[in-house]
Length: 593
Image (cartoon, rainbow, N blue to C red; front, side, top):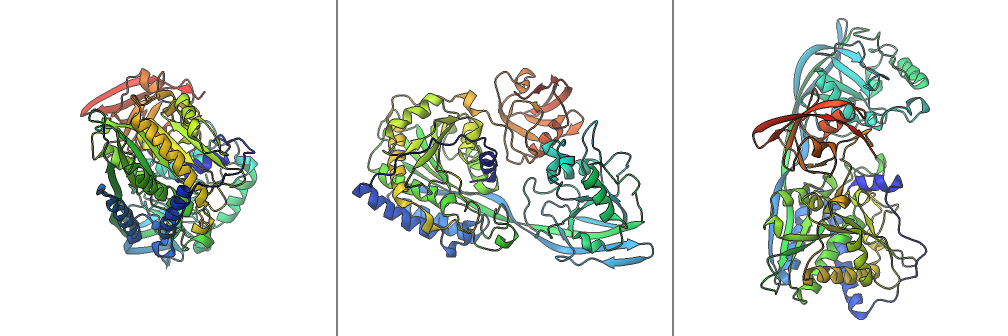
């Protein structure tokens, strides 16, 4: 599971299942056999040999081959769909020299300095350093950039904005490093040095865009030595006062950077494993119920680990996240094949979920069968840590009505407590890609725990008896949908999601449903919410926003950054493409309800 849902949970935004609940009843003999099969699968998927199933790892392909082999063994038609992914970023050439006056000092790569994975290449000499504190800019308030002409200079900022009362007034978006980097890119700086108080980050693929248009370097503050004068004192002033302390630091004390940097991005082809259980009804077998789970995890914890610096380099087994859901969908294939449902069952095992729902987004944009033939999607993500004493299930509906979610409760195993949650609190996993395509979804999830995104998410900590009972429940729900005369319709009201971004809550609501995939032309949307500003100005699914006010938009991150600079009641001209036709309209922005 991606980290966004975790942030919602810890913020108290996801409804929790009622407690206490009765204990699990003893599993039936068939469930005992299912538990043993799933234990075997999870143990393989989460084994040390699979090295955490990281995206771009060869071990993820081994997992995909194992899943495909299991499904072929059932006599099912299978295929592997592949799509490109930047797996590694490697330095090919590098040189960095700090110059003060007539003397220069070479920085040591990997020790003093390192590129960020989203950095552009660069070759320049003696570009002046400009200290900008944190690179924060809030209209009418705190402004680290005030009074500076930054074009052609190297901006120096700190990575992390302090969690201090003096900064409590800042919009949460200003804490995002990416938001601040995009601002400096717009200011046409020659490059950015990010001061890494907690130590250098290794060179790797970064969250967000594949790369920016400026070089971005991480630097240990100690590596500056005395070349930036009283930098430490200025940071102390900022922290003590909550006010910028950089305005008189332009070019002083005359320190400059010479940089040569060439990066190579190594591409991998990530797998989605696909199989079909054919339906038996001549009229309905052309319709599909999707059962999905993501098979990737965090590898050696290079990105998204919750275990801190000491966990980096350790195997993150991901037994619950999401070997559990992967094994459960394979088990459902075993059980459902014998049931001969009226509609067909489409089994999808995704990669790339931990990097932003990449695999499910790719399948939805490049479906292996007509997308309008998919009538419902069930997603299983983190379903292995059931508490035997008080078993709980969050069964979410994104794009499904609350009545549809509640109708499944009649199949719930005895002793389980369950929610009937809908809307934004049940986003953050692969079902979101389908909901954005106007396909109703159910999301099966048994809760966050202390081993989430840590090396301790081990196969021996999974409750296989509980998983077997969830498989019985999932089978009943899937058959109910597959055999029904009519499938519950998509509910646009429960499909509303706040746009994803590092910036946190925004002051205004726009109403676009985002497409998170990269698009060379701008920020593509999958739709608009009813009554929203986006709908009122005429935006439609498939439109590509290119400008929001004066700011060019090349990605969702640009869009969120631009949106965060406005307040309710502001007027802004929005420009977009519909096909190749440019369009624009003036929007009056609304506050969030």
